[in-house]
Image (cartoon, rainbow, N blue to C red; front, side, top):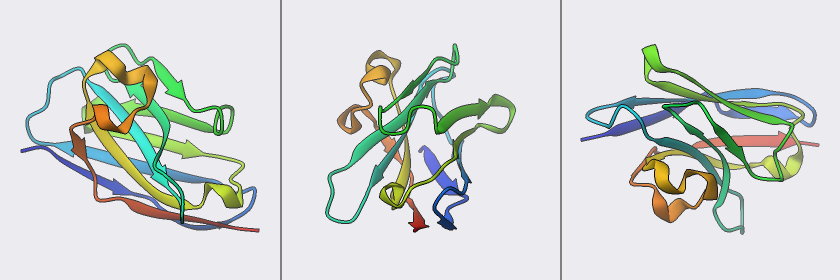
Amino acid sequence: QVHLVESGGGSVQSGGSLRLSCTVSGYIPSVYCMGWFRQGPGKEREGVAAINTGGGTTYYADSVKGRFTVSQDNAKNTVYLQMNSLKPEDTAMYYCAAGPLQWCALLRGSDFYYWGQGIQVTVSS
């Protein structure tokens, strides 16, 4: 059984920063794709960023490019999402998810097998 647990969400003013963490436990291949997704009020789920845990290659949605950074600490089985210059439109429930490398760049939720419970990020203007 694979478990993903997010932490680090909360409320921040526009222009502020937050760092989300996702810790993975259980049996999982040593190399996989870890993605971050979000779903805002009344919106569809959106792929935000992903990282190839083997080579470290990262992928970003255009909406967050230059503001968000995904990184990993293999020793801690943890992936991070550093979010800077936050905007009210970044308000959403954020989820981490693990899946195969093959489609990592597509940031497509249907490709991911394991999901965290989600964590709220609220950005006020």
